Image 1 (cartoon, helix red, strand yellow):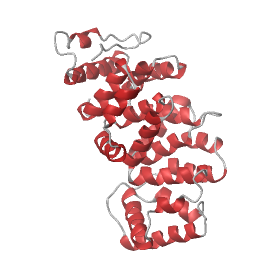
Image 2 (image 1 turned 90 degrees about the vertical axis):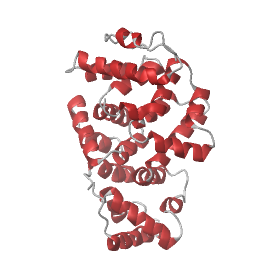
Image 3 (image 1 turned 30 degrees about the vertical axis):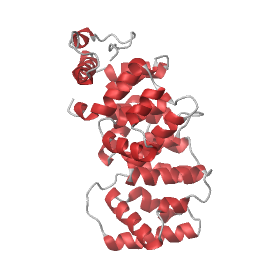
Length: 314
């Protein structure tokens, strides 16, 4: 493994951490885990009141290498990291509604609440306001409640409600009323458990998964975001597998998308994403990353994809 370094414009020392691996097998990735844990700790503890702000400034400058950006993004608290990603996604002329959907639908209600708090503290603006001001029409109608709703997180399911709301969704799709108020209400307010039961009943009763019936116009941005939201709410590993596949197979690797997915999911559900990637592409994700990256950037991504769970309590 290549030697680990903190970006030059970051004043936090990494020498002590790097020294831990001297004299040992450089290919033993397990040795890199305590190094990365210590680097993260050094960054976070050196200036506990300002480290997030300093890291965000470095990321905002956009002059870092891919490895440096990955380290900076990884070192952030999850809420601060998501706030940064959401702000980057809602900027005028560079908006990325996919990232907004991703954050709103794959984080828990409590995590999303913390993201919005971090967003307001950092940018002196509200995420809901930025989403509203940078979207319009059906896109705003979908995205605004997604970032506004505090979903119930319990496992309880009302099967009678699931059947009735599956029929509502089916009827609206037949009418091509994809932005109908009830359609949006069901997707944006129901708990993930309840929504899962509704969509399972939809498939059993009407013969297709709902996303298959939402592909009338593959180029329609609203329908694409609608399908992405449903996938993120029900099978997030399928959403992230697709993002990784597109990032890796693109003409010229989309390093930022690759970095974002690996950094944000390494400590969450990377094992499931890797299983889905292998099932869908017949190649391990690690092997695919090796083909399109190199050096310390590759090393960092591979450590997180292979050992992300080791960092959960750090």
